[in-house]
Image (cartoon, rainbow over all chains, first blue to last red; front, side):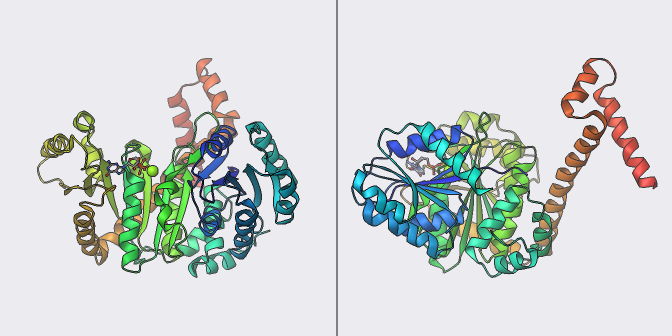
Length: 133
Length: 319
Ligand SMILES: Nc1nc2c(ncn2[C@@H]2O[C@H](COP(=O)(O)OP(=O)(O)O)[C@@H](O)[C@H]2O)c(=O)[nH]1
Ligand SMILES: [Mg+2]
């Protein structure tokens, strides 16, 4: 059996800066993962639907516009609603320290600060996969 | 954990349950041991659902065109399935699957199911998993199911030809390539789409395509050639009209059912043949690499191994 880790990288919200998201997407590909990139300005519903159809193991969200406290938990809720509750969520972007506990509460396993090296994200994913099996 | 009960999974796929469909697609891609019996239960050569291949070089606008086609069929209330295949990196085995970016407007439509697949590079694997993915989406009630593959190489041709009809997408600037393209590749297109007709060079492209179709042997199939712009939408109506004509023409033919069955059986025979031969070599020599070592040491030749396989086969058949 040839199992590959599948990750969806999504950008909810209105900001159009996807350089960070694309950088992470490429790094994950180079680490041997299959990365589904959905593009900018996606609704939480579009992201959650895509994640279920693509049967990904992880969903990573990137957001610079400051609407994370609303949009991140919304993606988490819709994922559960669509039966994707075993999908591991992580996020990144401009997110103040004090918002992190709330997002973790909402189901996010990790929040990465701007400038996080791609290796950290790769390591996080590999650790989570090990815990799984 | 997801249930590993074949009957249950098959039932849910046939009901069009999205989460299960998505999981079964992964089982097929990963070569899960249960996947063959699932496919066995689901397979229906007489299915009404049609499949459409979209193939052509990278950047030709295949995903943009697919987005237009989804819109067209959604307009008449049909549930549309899409399988978008992108190449996997030969170095890491990973893949960046970006076709969804061009299909965003359908992303939250529950009547559209889009699945991205990496080609994963293993021999015959691409054809095998796309073949099964097409059948699964069709069984789940998507009609039509579109499969987008990149390039015009052997593997892509094999994949595209598994669909009921195939669009070959070409773009301005490809005139020289068209001239050197093998006739067989032109022939896989049931329709040749000249996309980016809003761009310069579309006339030259059309003349090169026409010239190379002229060279096809007398009596062979000459596909219609349609100009369009997937960006502006110009010409899409002509294209869908041409497709509908073709599709309604083939649907009620016994030959469609026979063609599908033959293609699938041949594809499975190729896959199994390779697999079984490799198993014999591994059992005898340990690995393909070890067999190569022995050949280089002068102990045998590739033909010697061929003889061995034939003998092995004969002794099995004699049992
Ligand atoms: N000018 C023009 N650009 C197009 C057309 N169709 C697609 N494109 C653009 O070509 C690029 C590649 O398109 P995409 O659909 O991703 O190509 P694919 O790699 O074949 O799937 C994108 O920037 C599209 O916007 C068209 O008909 N005209
Ligand atoms: Mg594409």
